[in-house]
Image 1: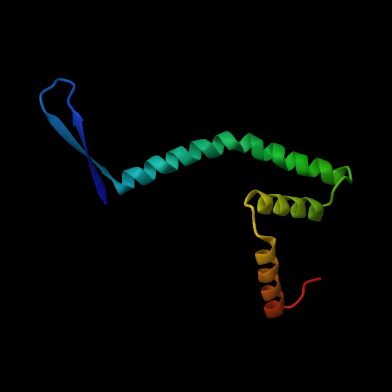
Image 2: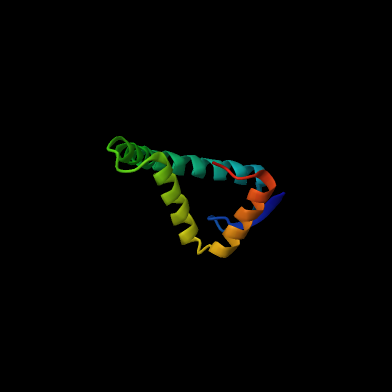
Length: 99
């Protein structure tokens, strides 16, 4: 797959056609993604340190943090709790109750 872009030559001589291939888009995307991931890395470390601090101080357990994060993400998505409970019941019937 390729896209043809027309651009005006700055010398005003003629229009140039430049083909951008799918591979070039992939490379461009990956370079941008890697730059973003590098920029995000310090925040990931802060997030980990925050979790460790709450666990080490006994304020929350790993399960408390996991549950709070899951609940918050569902809240942000405005998830329908009735649908979620129905799906949970289906899974429990199929695979059995978990302890």
